[in-house]
Length: 206
Image 1: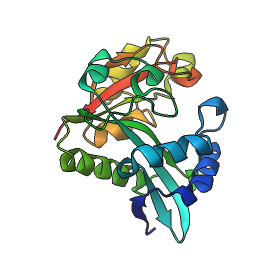
Image 2 (image 1 turned 90 degrees about the vertical axis):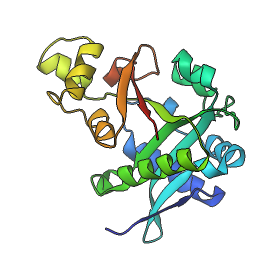
Image 3 (image 1 turned 45 degrees about the vertical axis):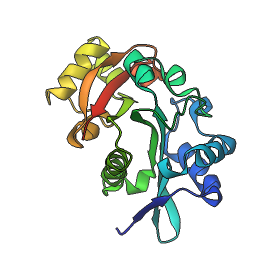
């Protein structure tokens, strides 16, 4: 399947909002989906950091980012505290870290290289802006099923097993393959019952 990564434009927003509902069905909370005004604000504040994947005139993926100061990165706080909520009120052009807010890929186009292409675009942006790193907090959505059906381990142990290759997680495992490294687990990162509300703290440095 051929696709292209390009900057997100205001006219793409309605398709991106629709994509969120397809990509993140319940039990993921709809309250965490982007609203149109969120994405329009992202494009206004940081147009260089918002991307879509397009194939045959259709948006099949989106990628949202902000730049945060070094102190915000080192604090390793919740998603909202780190970026200033869905309007990215803490976006700081003079910051040191490109922070990944979200990647969404249409379910029918997963495992086709869209996610890796978005990450390569993020890494290129880190280099172009001479930033210190790319960082993010990552969902671990297979944790709940693992604890229910395999072993009742804590989230830190689960993350370590994914890093070791003992367990596959549909979100964390691909990101490790893209060259990100696990720094730790952030408790109470965001509302996410599948991940026990935690996030895997990940970093890539040029």
